[in-house]
Image 1 (cartoon, rainbow, N blue to C red):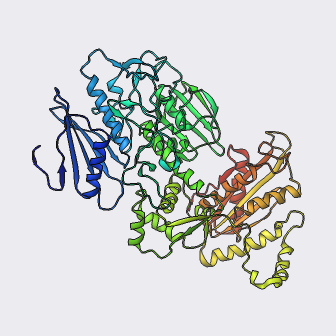
Image 2 (cartoon, one colour):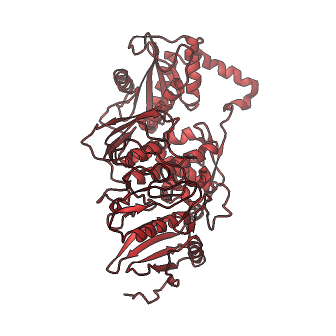
Image 3 (tube, helix red, strand yellow):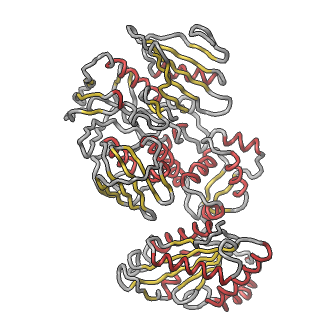
Length: 633
């Protein structure tokens, strides 16, 4: 409709160049787009003596703080999209341009060799460059452009694949700047390795400041337009649709091992190294609370499972794990195929999620922290405007959480009332913190009672409570538990409010791995109940049940919400030893969960369903089981 020489409405076309743009030119394009919001800025350049030409398009919309970038290539016959990003990081765009410049410089050579740069501080390296593999993904993978050689998914970074003889002094064939790491500056970029299809490990050399293709590169990533960030804010590349890359670390990754500890290696480094080594087999990660598995075929993930997550979401979840051990089992395969994204795309998203979790932790987030709104009466328009500078999440969902936080809630309270995976709550809470909507306050040292206003008169009323409590353990007796369970059942009948019951077996094994157990001493039960008190609400009732069983009554709680509390209980009593001779190895824990109305209509049905689930947990591999009712909340 418009020819090449015609100016299109809403577009500003800059003078055509005959060289690849450097950082200063990109910054000028960025600033032009920033000043002319809503208009697209176009920059074209051509390669002398070649039919090829390139174009960059950048545009700010009326609201967001990061522009949309598109890079196109024209070979004289057709145009194709090379990359698309939404980022304020000019270094990311510069790296893509350098990749195009590298390809254009060496494409006329038909020998297939790729000469490395010479750097006096590093030496030289040489190898064979496989242009078809330059995208770092397999041809035909969803979300990629096999013709362009770059993934077109937003935020995915091009990674060339090098094959051939291992260089001994410098990087093999390709040098990539290593960026400095900062939680407040997003993920970092690891140096590109030289790889061999037969190698079982890859060494990633460290690189300093270099000059690449005549363009100076610095370890200081410039953030144009973000020099004065608002309180609690981060650059745009902090989010998952940014330049966050696998291997975000303060130094080069070590040689990949087939097994090790996550204290010494990051999951992102392990995954990317196995992928670039083109390994086939299964990576298994044993975390504190779950097991993760990723099946590779020639370095490409085919199936992944991590806790309840599967596929690409499982790979993303694994990147956030920081404790545990890992092992690789060569040539172990599966028929399942659940991964669609490229490995790097999942690592990119996982790295961004991990950085968000770290930022929340630095702000003081623990399960007992209070989530306090700074402003409780924002209109929809005001809330939407404040959230517009954060990560693009569903507004209605964010609004519903905003409404929940209008009442005093801890982080535990939020996750109980609105069960969420870390991939959901981390971006959401980070948005609230980043946009100045919420603050995180430290846990209270002690909970105040509703009857504190009575002063000394409160003790007389509290004395009634002691009639239900066993003095040796300090928690309710069986009779007390049944009394309050009846009371909550009547509330369920009258108002149809859900009611959940957790029955726990908590005992000491007579031998490691033995199913024979003995009751815990009263002082150990008291210690465990103190930890559970930090997890449960004041209105939840904990007490003895039959034999070595304990019960927790959860009013107005669905079984799915009770499952979250059960996991928190498991962590609280098992992560740290209850005594010198009672630890995770010899502590028998089995937890069964049931609820009304999903598991019946009366108390016998509720108790029977919870006990059946507990017995199943005793025989199973995981200590928490939700009642297998046909009805579910």
